[in-house]
Image (cartoon, rainbow, N blue to C red; front, side, top):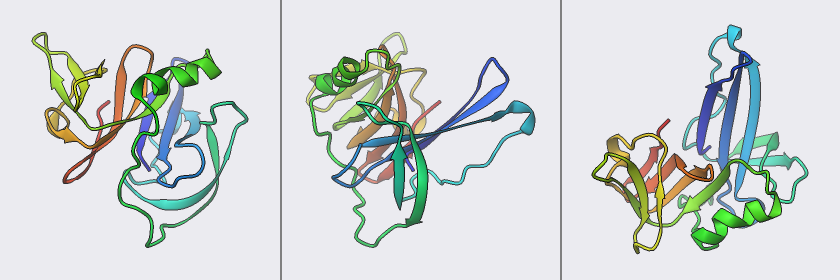
Length: 180
């Protein structure tokens, strides 16, 4: 499990989004499990632990860019399961535009970013910058704690069209959670 986002909507429902990252070579890279419940029911616990690795069978809703899924079966992780996040299989500019060309109504695009770092500018705004210096993207909110200034070997994020929301990142010493 990559990350979880919980938001209370205006209509009184709570939206619980669980993001999964496919560490294998086949299938969609990301999966989004989406659940809704009334805010009056209180906070629900998650059936997943951030960073947990497992084998699963997912069924994706029909789409040119499959993302939203249902969990059909979940098994324990195999011993041979890799501990490294996969490398991005396309350039960042292609990853930002490809989903929008297939489905122009797409609001959020999950991305796997290459090696980079998060820093703040003179105005205090947080930015993700690729290690080679060719790409720079603004970040939602502020980068705090270990996320700021740390070398990020891989970063999973959501691109909203103008800002990144960091879900989680891999560093030379392990996984760190993103920010809200």
